[in-house]
Image (cartoon, rainbow, N blue to C red; front, side, top):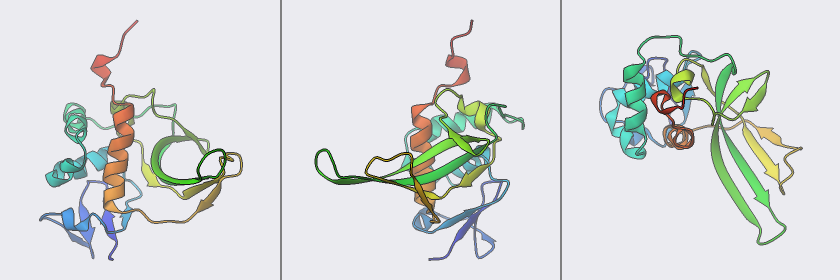
Length: 178
């Protein structure tokens, strides 16, 4: 499959050509993100290609955030950037052996990941977003995590980022002030 490039304005490019029609057929294609790609770029992509909103119910609410925060510079000093990555976790004991695969969206500070659950999506819009390596956790040993090069599809990015943001989706106007 041909790699899809996603620029910092949320445009999908296939062989260098901006896609203007339906993009659902590209969901299984591997992707590459522009070096300046941000969470705002992700939301611009969803707004530009509205059929992608059908992948998650929360995307409409997230698009409202970007419409209310048009100014650039929505960053917090607690994190340097954002990383989206896959994890494969193998568990063998106790209980039945199982294999779990999941995606994560985390903040990065000094090369360490940080949960985003205490940050409002508005405050994360202009942090760069990169695709990380696959993390392999064997038998629950979270101390010795192996990392591997991998690829991501358009579907994984859209569904995964929406899923992760749905857990910490708490618009700024809903926060309790002191």
